[in-house]
Length: 266
Image 1 (cartoon, helix red, strand yellow):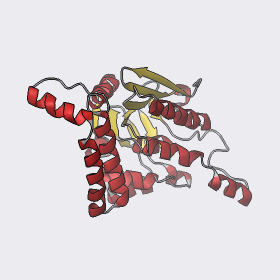
Image 2: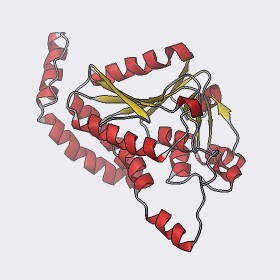
Image 3: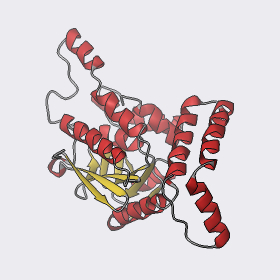
Image 4: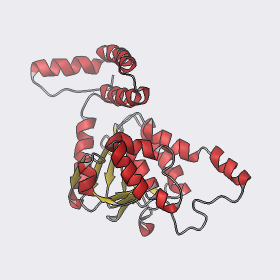
C-alpha cells in the first residue's frame, strides 16, 4: 500500500511507523487512522517483524490530536448523523487493532501527545518520552470526553486519582511528571529517543518470539479478566504450549552450554 499520512519502514526485525503530518504537529485525520491500521496489518503479516515502534515525524509532536482548525471536527448535524457516527467502526477498529496487536508496540513520544494522539500511545505496550514531550487529554475543556476507553487506559497506568485530575482539569503535564506518575516508562533526551526505542525493540526482538507474544497476551487478557484465578488458569495453557516449542529447548540448552541462543520462532 502507498502511504502518505504515515511512513512505514522496516529494518532487521523492527518496523517503525511514523505519523507524517509534521506541518500540523501530526494532528489526526481519517486518512492517518486508515493508514495506521493498514501499516499495522502489514507488520503483523510480516513474519520477519517482531516489534513495532510508533512515533511522529519531526521533533515537535508525536500527535497533537484532533485537527481543531477544521470546523467540522467533533460535530454532528442531526440525530440521524449522531446515530451514523455511533455506528461507524473506524475508531473502534483503530484502537482494537493497536490494543490487540500480537507483537509488542513501543510508543516513542517526541513532543506533543494530546487527545487522540495520547490515547493511541496509551494503547501501546511501552511508552518512552523525550525530554521535550508534553501530554494532555484536553477533551473535557473542548466540551467532550476522552472517547474509546481513553479514561480507563490512562487510569490503568496512573491510577484513578491521577487520571481524574488529568481528565477533569485538561491540563498539560511534562515528560518528567508523566514518568513520575507512571504514564511513561522512561524519559530520555530528544536525540536519544529513537536510539533508546530501537535498543529496547532490538532486545525484545532477540528473545523467543512465541514467549514474547504469549507473555504480552497473558498480561493484557489478565487485566481485562480482572480475576487472578481465571488468569492463572489461562496461563497454565499458554505455558504448556511454550514447553513444547523448539525455542524453549534452545533457550535452556544455550543457558546450560553458556552460548548465545538461536531462536527460530517455533
